[in-house]
Length: 516
Figure 1 (cartoon, helix red, strand yellow):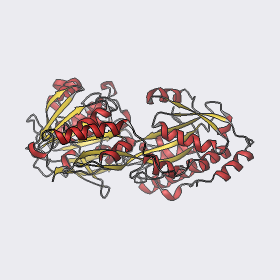
Figure 2: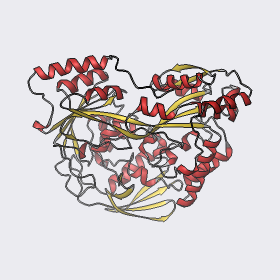
Figure 3: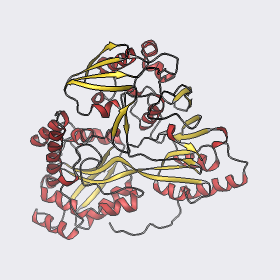
Figure 4: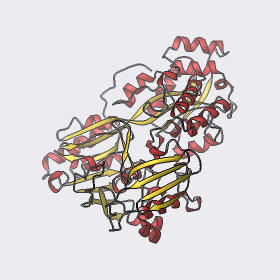
């Protein structure tokens, strides 16, 4: 792939932009905007939220919803990677499998229930019980049980040492009101969510729209801060072109589902702005080094190195992903704990060296291979073009994520372009260990590597964790089990006047946004 400038050929989005702009200029003032202190949001391109109950949801937008409605025990400051008190004010560790927490007094749930130790104990024991069916078990399976040690104190017993505990207690583990949840369960929490967060839910029309209003009781000093905008109106709109038309026509103020091409055209129009913010999600080119697919060429590290040197990652990142995207050389996102950049072997773009490696491996004329992916076909096509330059004839098999995941689990994908967002957890265990610990997604089957990752995941000593993870990074990148590719961006488009900031964990903080 070369760094050829993009052309200015027409696209469907250009037509939408032009039409909507004409309508906007000739129509009355838009309904959306700051006049009624309401932020109107559209999302839904990946489908509606499975379940508004945070423990029975797998959608990214469900995570966005949860961060505004519920609170966690701990707060993670993304600016300095520190952990601060939220619903818990302090904590200690009597041993490596026990955590004692002192809880905040004076907090009230949206339905009027006072927050206390009973809510924490009920929530943690509910999600720890496998019979209750929490969807993302690895977020909660470390909890053995929680016990009340006082009106505002709790002890958590763990099944194993959990060095990632602060990431989990500041992210996916939100606290529910015990009386309400015991009465209504997951179905009732889906119908009318109740939390302690900066916004309270006032209306739910499943898979269609949600209304959230500023929580007037959120004045107890949460590090999130009080919500600035009075009302959030969220609409599930599956079609991105419809989202764009709604934005340009004044029906919504904000969307995060659009592509880089769409964003570039929108921000060129008066009254609109946008951002392409880097996220923790990274793409990687994976190889069946273990031979699960019985495709011999990629079992040879010289072939894997040839492919690594043939793919122009920088050009794909700059020209196709764009925005804040950058080349990534590690099998983890750089900010994640343990993701030591110096431990990685870096493969520079060098087609001549790639051809020599193929010849040395016994493939002077190249070979044919299937490349599997579910993301942007343009990314895969760029890789295919680069491989063609060194004689490898790659055929794209583009399919939905779940169909591709099933094929992978069956061991049928010799070469694949995939990505992972780590559930927005800023720890290397949330990505690398998922794919290299001998599970169904592991195409390396390297016992020593899996042992290093096990140490990194479970050791209580941070230095021991870092050392084990560095060994793992070195092995993965030198053997080229993966070729890390680039970080993803999320494209946000919104009306002028919204004070917006993107975050690498890919979660908009709607409570932190304001109008100029």
